[in-house]
Image (cartoon, rainbow, N blue to C red; front, side, top):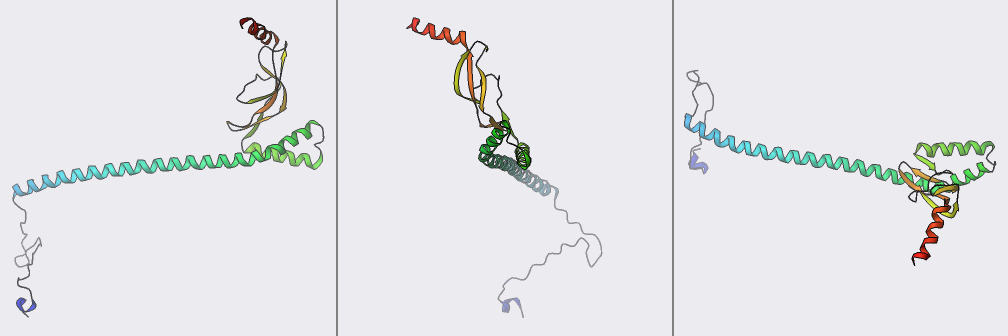
Amino acid sequence: MTPRENGSEQEPVIRDNRKIDPETLAARETAPAPDETAADTSALGGAAAELLAERTADLQRLQAEFSNYRKRVERDRITVREQAVAGVINELLPVLDDIGRARDHGELTGGFAKVSESLESAVGKLGLSSFGSKGDPFDPTIHEALMHSYSAEVAEATCVEILQPGYRLGERVLRPARVAVAEPESGGGDVLDDEPAGA
């Protein structure tokens, strides 16, 4: 069947790209003219260099985005864990208060003492610590003053009685310590005496 009968008007084009001529078994010289090669290489080299720079910038941007994403996910995971632990421990604070009152009254004996020690040690491992002791300077960020008085025995606002201990989880204050505060007598009296005179 001829190409015309087959429907094709052109003869097939066959390109022989072999490096050795099969008839003479000699190496073929297929190098293009030097002017064409230099022009093609420089054009291709410039385009390839641009493309390479663009792809490299894209990859660096994607790597930075992925790194930021990993850090954000890790930070969110830690935050969610801390919130979950804080929520559970907040519910246990009244139980810890009851254990403290029972200890103060000498009612913490027998098996209940072991259970209370286990509970306190478990919440301690999670990072819970109590604060607030008699004689601490009053700090409104961690103390809640429920009673106020004046005393000549203190030089600054001082916690003279701890009504309920405060609790902190790591650096986060879960509950402020509820305290009775005493201020120096001379400072408080002077302020009260000076106010009516200035009015």
